[in-house]
Image 1 (cartoon, rainbow, N blue to C red):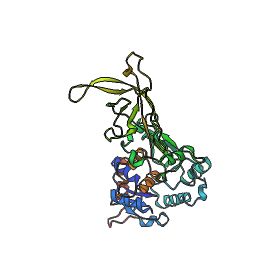
Image 2 (tube, rainbow, N blue to C red):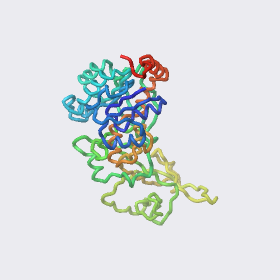
Image 3 (cartoon, rainbow, N blue to C red):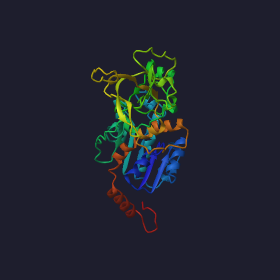
Image 4 (cartoon, rainbow, N blue to C red):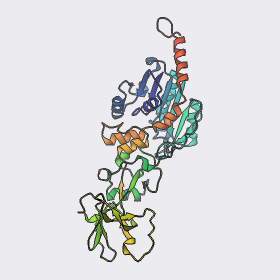
Length: 393
């Protein structure tokens, strides 16, 4: 089988084919982004790179069995200016149409964003099939509604895997990707395109990953991560102190002031918001087999039963960190292998992941190109080739 992938990006289509075990003889990739090409070469060195899609001619290729692509969507997206086919990037769709006519593949697949019905119908008219809308949230932890035009038979809506935001997070990433107070304020209060902070304890899915994520745009999706207090604390006359920071009980931020003592002053520029939680000190065995008092936190934000013992109800704070997604988390949202995009700057990793496909959605569609279809294709190839090894006309 020969595959032609237009606007190939970092070759998500190739990941899907390999994930399914679908064998192919040649994988042609039309792509001009040097960083995306570098990532593809690292992972799939046998890829045949063609460069500019407008320069690709069917006569220069082996007979194509599968044509796929996700033409640039900026002109169609509801998040953009909606220039539609007047946007030169979105007009590249017609290169897909041209090569579909030239190559006459058995199968084709085109992906694009949700758009106004009038423009959706233009694409449908040119391709001769109605699109199917699939939300990546069924197969990943990301809400990402996309349209897929294909003649691959028997495509259905995939079953929900039940993946949630907690499933894809890297922990202990606050120092690497934490947002400043100024950026957090812009996201929350921007007059144009407000973003949203997702808390893994409160949200199952996160918003759509965007290509410009490295710029930390106001309309993107970010994380609000609760950093849980460890169970053990050290008590002083004025406060209980927990080693949340890992600095050996040295940080004042780790102190929980006792209710009958004056509170610490609020510091300017703090990146955390106190969350009041209830817990109780309980006698528990430590590693040495000795009993010690440990703080056990309630997770339901309720209080324990009121008793005559003060330690049965104490208040703690849960620090909240506001940060962007890491590149690996973005890979997981797109169901791409961890560190697949490693080796290029993070800014470029975010860009190509935002532009890319959710691989498991593509695999769900391509799985109907089964081994029987491949055998049929090989039979057709043999039938149209004479003894000299050249295809007959």
